[in-house]
Length: 376
Image (cartoon, rainbow, N blue to C red; front, top):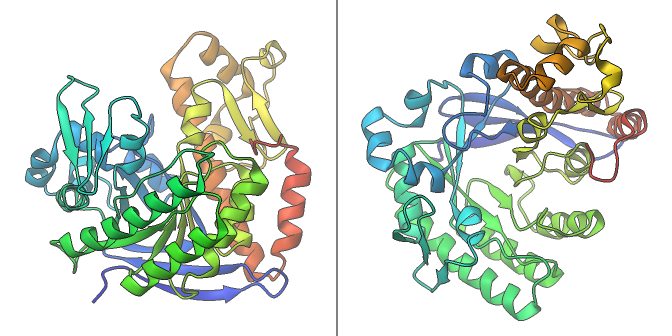
């Protein structure tokens, strides 16, 4: 029996977008949803209690980073990542593939796996599909990801094809290596670069392996928006309609709304906390740079339409002061706001879908927020 299941609760008559419920061992979560990223078993600057307060459901942790520190044995002895970081909701671990393959200068890819240099001490490490799942079993997240290669953009057809076929073989090996199949689910990852036939083939073969859910990888790696949306659409076309779909590494407003239009159920990104560290905030009326002198005496809330702890209690003037003084509390407040903003965006999207007006909602958001082409 799969530990993670999915049910569709409503399909928007206007757009075809859907809402659903993802059932996991650590609770049920409504979809479509935005998932905050807790790379090293913490969402930067936010406590688990703050994550609950802002409505987060699934939180991500990173296999590669947790393997390096504190190590799989520490996590196993702690009773898994939930107990280790005291987060009681559902969690997902990526495979470590993106991080490993970003180390282009030190890695060596073979059929067995990838050899690469530990960035902390220079030691050579080896990560295979089996090892990735072994580490993820120790971490203990509800959802694990297959070990895959996230190829650069652009890539030749030959490279994309060879990589995609190897990723499929790795997916089967990883699925067979799961030592906790009744507690942890594995999602397969569609790859294939910006080639339609490769995306279709990857999805078809993963479906034959019968994963409980499927991710779409290899996007948002330098391609333009239209290319990315085509890659997502091609990947989704051959995936089962009744299983969850996860678009990896996407958090810009326009990308999230386009993903929902394409029947994507789950998205994640480090964007909200990353841009908060630089004083960039997402609001109902577009991007706001809190560093600007114009906010020094602005005693209004950051976003009057937002219900987060930051907007309920503090002003732009105070945030401007904290940022200029390099005070950590300012980064915390802005991280809370940006994360809540994207969680709330998906809550609003679900309401619009249930009201059969998602297309109208999408148009209203993109018109009112006046974001640039990046979507933030």
